[in-house]
Length: 275
Image (tube, rainbow, N blue to C red; front, side):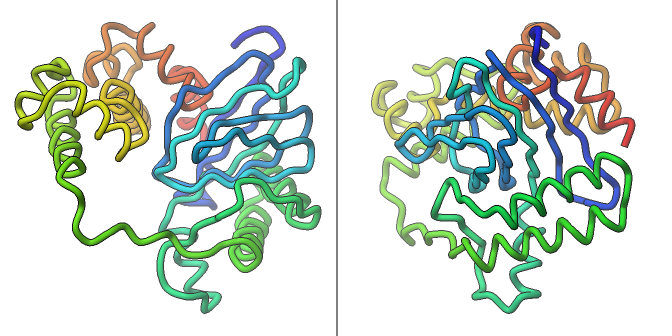
């Protein structure tokens, strides 16, 4: 980590399917990426800003950032001194289950506003996060459940439903995505990929980014990092994991891993092994 920057990424046994991050960043900038989970972040100091749904969003101290799953975003300092924050990453089933308990309308919860100011829920998020960090299982699980329930009832709607018949260019993008996932270690070039799905490189790149929010190479990098996380969770060594997911070496994995997850793969593996 750079001087003045710290980060811890872990999971508490009392919070299955919820990752946690506590970090202070001054120079760190996240690459464009998305999560298959929600990101619920409380900014404690400074200002974070991020690109999200075509706009730049800012959150200062006390603000709660709400990033929906599968939504491309970034993250960077909004002021020279950077920002400090605590983040919870609950899976879709976790929030959907709580929404069902509360009797909210069926469907995947969706937060239309990327930043909310709610001192009560901010205090609850901080208390839940600290309880998870100190190993208080009962408090962590109870406070987190209350936090998620409060966010859902106050700020969540339902995820927009995609059209039933996707456009032809969307089908091409999906085919290209599937080919990339099948060839994780030795992917084709853009020209080869376009030829295999029956279009040109420019048209494929445009439709792919329009549908997935990322160009093919960035999408593949994000997927490799996701697979790397699962292998590290299973006890894999960073050097072996780098080769298994198609990175040139461990340094290459580390650079991309930190730009997406926020911590290097070695630190991630140690912190998760300690849970």
